[in-house]
Length: 347
Image 1: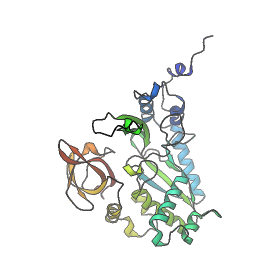
Image 2 (image 1 turned 90 degrees about the vertical axis):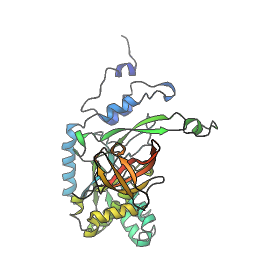
Image 3 (image 1 turned 180 degrees about the horizontal axis):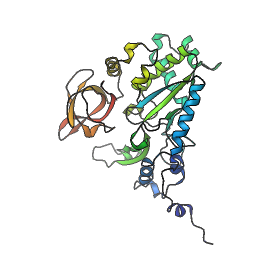
Image 4 (image 1 turned 120 degrees about the vertical axis):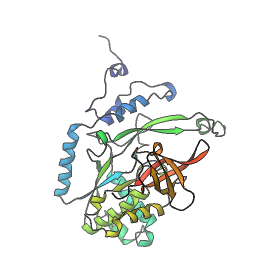
């Protein structure tokens, strides 16, 4: 009896509507090109990006959310303002990785990542507000080596139906512009180098963030997370604007957070005042006319032209949107590029 190799067997296997995305990524790479060239992995990632969620996941999510509420866990929805990628450098058979639910293959944000982000933001950005590393408030909420903190951070699961066609995974790319230079061949970087695209999978959508503990401390934790997620982001590539999430306004209004924190103007001012990642800028969209508009920089200066083709999420341009961008050049003229929408204007 003839025995076929594993890859020969896999050629007849096609991804389906109930295929586990994590299993497909790890086990079903059809072929590999020597040296990793030729974008051999791109079709593999494309198949995952086009896959649909298992119908069983929505049932599981509803049961999981109900279980949390029954034990007194407080939950809030947070919407990704663009792309996010958790676990990009994790161990795996591919050059890149992503954190997916072990059973259902959907993206999620580990509770440990949320706690780590909130703790780091508190001790580095809120030290003057008595949240320093050795403060009583910090140790009470987050704990230390001697005892656990008051708050339990649960994994934040993807909310079914929060993206079009329920496809939270998307094809993304890291472009290495100067491979010879990075290999130490003493070739100086130059604009005429041929880039080497490295495909990977990122995620989008809304996530249910769940915290458990004394109500006042839960509110404090959510307030810190609100700032940290919108200003700094979570996961990999945050310096490029990835990983930004904003709590949905309809949910924020049900909390005991002071009313002034809920308004569009306060959120806009907070985003514009926060320092953007290196090489990027923030501003407010004005004079939106169909497919183009202009951005008023948050720190003042010349307006920048923007075209809808530069919007990461594909959403239409609307006056009042708070955006983050880098400044590029098109046909000899300055324009905003690689634009991420951080905040939508009020209806």
